[in-house]
Amino acid sequence: MRIMMLNRFRCNGVTNHLLSLAAELCRQDFKVVVVLTDCPPAYLNPLRRYHRFFPCFAENSPEEILRLARHYRIDLLHLHDLSLFSTADRLLRSRPVPCGVTWHDLAAPADNLVLLPLSFLITAHPQAGAIPPSLSGRTFFIPEGIALPEQRLTEKEGSRVAVVLEEGFFDSEGAAALLKAAALSDVEVELLCPQPLPLLKGRNHGWPLERSAVLAKTGIVIGRHRCLLEGMACGNAALIAGRGYGGLFEPQKSPSPLFPDLSGRGEEPLCYRSVFFDLAALLEDRSLLQSLQLQSRQFVRENCDLRLIAEKTGRLYREAAG
Image (cartoon, rainbow, N blue to C red; front, side, top):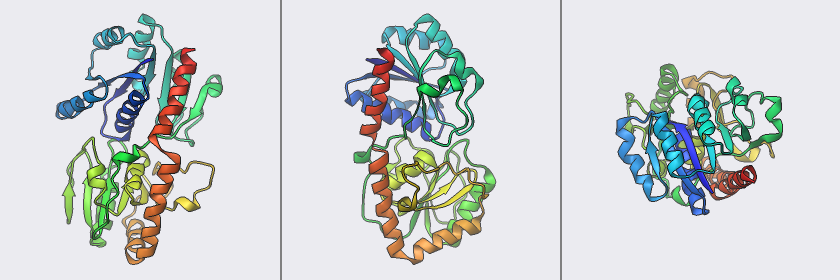
């Protein structure tokens, strides 16, 4: 099967989900072409490196996107951003193939969702808002997959904390609270954020598309959803933080079989005191820290193995295409 994945480039976990899923699907004998709109110039060269796995294009023109769909003779469109509805709708009118959407948000999907001839809707959050009744029988929860072989496990040295701030999921006050808590804890911060922020101790890495080399150096990761899972796969204990604070994630206390809410939208606002107390508890109790580090890797291995996630997604593709 020939799949086109369409998304708007943003410095957040959705972009990495798309790229890693496309690469794994290609390993499973699908032919995938990825199109990203609104790509900043600084990311054009990093994106070209993905050509060794699949055709990858930074393209804004709907006409050019249609040309790519015709050139690659796609059998299915997989849309990852409903703000590209008009481009997707035009493509499907020109080339009537099955269409699926992955809804990466927690709010209820946009009204225009029901205007697409959807074969399936994937929700990356089990806590997502109300799905239109007409789509309830075609809606599937599939977690975002993490490529475990690429997430390095190394011996943790010293007290390093990865703080991951995604575009659109933090504000200046929340970022300041996290960095203040880290400073009070006297830890080295490995900051992954699209904009530079002042650090008392540590390094600002910007927003690299490949983050495992940074996350492998740390023992604790602070972030949300996919970026948190990437850190956990590298053997980090996890603090859930987005626009709000979700506290320390203890996988063995997670209510199974429900997938936990890692969105960081918690009712508790981001306060440096709460983050500081949780960091202090981990740094003072090495046995707790090491236990949570092991639990983190195990949780990702059991729930978010990219190979299995791609297999589930591939089955939806085949069913949609008949």
